[in-house]
Image (cartoon, rainbow, N blue to C red; front, side, top):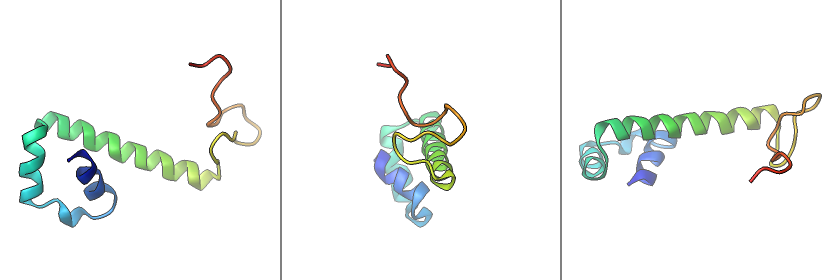
Length: 75
């Protein structure tokens, strides 16, 4: 159900009909749906922003030490 919810947020809001909400509420509270929806939207936005900056996986943005590269010693 969480993946269907993510699909509605990311690709097609029209699938978020009463039947979907009823199914979601069988698994999640309203507070959980808000938190999950926020996390999905935030993650989507972050990924699009990173793509806009032209940063690839395991790359660092030029002239900085920040990027998607794990720091040494990170677990």
